[in-house]
Length: 202
Image (cartoon, rainbow, N blue to C red; front, side, top):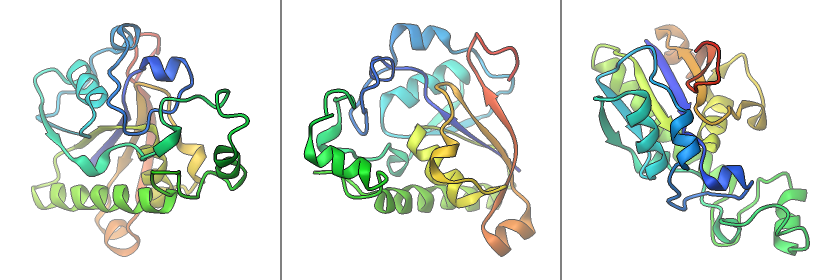
């Protein structure tokens, strides 16, 4: 079974380097037009409850049924959402969070550990569900943070959290192997993909 873990297209917040978190920010017109149809057509795509993932899935996989999984939402960044790092250079809470490696609890939001547990539990459940259904491709359109959490936990070869952030419209294809998943709860990285018009190939 192949697992596609993709990031949504660009939003105005991405372009402005603002933290989005769980704000329901849509794709920007430029971000939406930059996406291109994928080279395969799954029957089902799993998305978060934030519309930027729905819009991206519609562009990449027109006609696919979208199934919303709220637990695949981006990290709740609390008081940092809607602001850029430039806006918060003198914010003591933000500086403490960054200086601590961005692992602590955001004011009014989640810690990285809380976020990763939420996302990885939902992801593992989807993998098990697809395997039980005969192992059709598992296609997920979610967020940069979701990719980082999932890939850090499950991907081989292993890399640390921040190594796994793909560009907007990009992501990873992983292979499910029965023995590896059942024994170690790991998936093997096959390749990176990019579903934007400026990418030479996907």
